[in-house]
Image 1 (cartoon, rainbow, N blue to C red):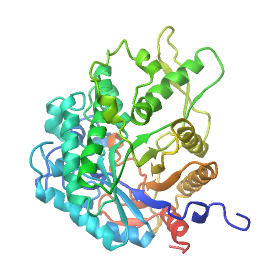
Image 2: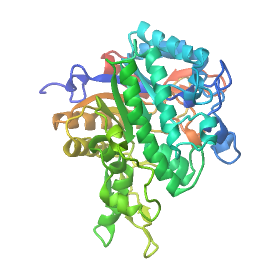
Image 3: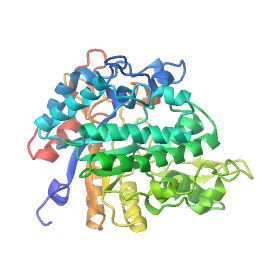
Image 4: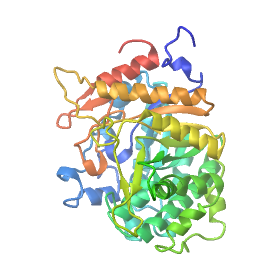
Length: 451
């Protein structure tokens, strides 16, 4: 690589996928249009005290109406692939039964618009917006939800599979299960550890069942799942630290990696949670379904966990600590080396399955001044993490793609509109889009031409 910028896209495989990512509830709006039903996030964000400033995704950034403008913007940036998510309640308003044709037509139009601009569509089938009627019937802690999800996935693949060649079943089931049903910080806002564990299994079961229905409807499509993964390090070498690392790594990483890629839950974590649940929701044959062979694994990476035992003697409490490194507006330490560590760890421990960085990005306190957003911190974030990806490729990791999170500022879940992750600034009053310096940098990285 003598004489070549090590961060040139030429340092990555020639067929490497370069894209941006979004999700339905965060950008679409139009929550009551064309027959869309309510989701758990409509209910959660409409409940006082759940979301910063009482924000909701009812309008979001109006992608439902502005998708052609947004696709044109991606094309102008030189983006080659777009990872979007399909809103289950737009396709099946009650979570089951007949397809809502008007709702599914939106994704037909979106996919056609992407292809017309030479942008490859990657469809995520579940990015947290469970139809509210399914939550009313028990939600993800109930086995039937997994079965309904597989049916829905088959409908979408049947409709879009002639043009969409990449499907992701779930986005970050850890968040859906443990933030949604454990801590209650995300929709549906329930706080029951046993239900959170049941939800985690039924999410994975739904994934495995959906792999079957997607492949039946779209046999040539590539299918994967996206997990949010973290390297976990000890804060020091003191008593109990190694066990804290083991337990956090177990629930954050191995609880999802092992059943999907090895067909079994990690035995040590099963023992850790035995006082919460007997795991009787795991039926014979389930893990064979969960571990259906995949074409790729999506990895979302934002930061590293550094842990120590908590302050209360005799408990399993864990203390998450900082190391004095620069942080994003979310308070997450910026640690590109952590991306290298988690990518190489997954390849070392789980084999040569292609990996795709399906999300990587940062929130900062962006300010629009005279038509520009000078977000140098985000530029450095991207530069550092792309370099970590380059190093992982050189180390033998079968890294096949990178999707920056996110295309544009949007509804950031429980943070509402207070946190901005976009490469494109959005004025939430006027919906005007302005490419930030980070978007300009990414565009030049992709195209070799200043934006």
